[in-house]
Length: 84
Length: 84
DNA sequence: TCAATGATTAGGCAAATGTCTAAATAAAAT
DNA sequence: ATTTTATTTAGACATTTGCCTAATCATTGA
Image (cartoon, rainbow over all chains, first blue to last red; front, side, top):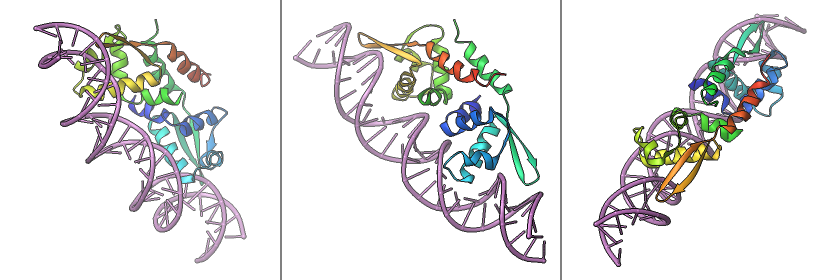
């Protein structure tokens, strides 16, 4: 829960999630969309993975990141207690 | 959106929201539940108010905080784009 | 009017965060 | 074999965060 909110508390990381909504992408392809250095994006991806918001698979020299939507259920559950 | 995620990214602030689920409370009553100083809780309440997650009304020398659930709709909307 | 109570503001400090460059690792291409 | 490409790791640095105590503001009560 902590890692989840922490991961979501950054506009770049949220933008990465939105990018992955249209399908998996390599670290490099993701980094291209932003003005930050590759190491910075790599770090953001690491935090997203720690929160289980994304998964990564190594494919040759590339690393492909995929959105993991199942974690959102946890967040929805937390929000649900405030409804009504 | 930024203020919202920022406000939620702290266990104490999330606990305050859960506390307010059972009804409005004064700053002092809220602070009693935690081991932090009154100024610290006051600061947390300020961040929650900046995110519009709570509202405050002054009643005499007390300040009553009330949960504002309408903001959660914004969050649900953001989450919804990831569903399916 | 003066003291007490509830709450916030101000200022300081250590830890966490987000960024960078340089260096390391690993796979692919020459 | 060596070089190039993709990515991560390491380390540094400025900013932000979360906490504290002391001081201030505002309302109530003696």
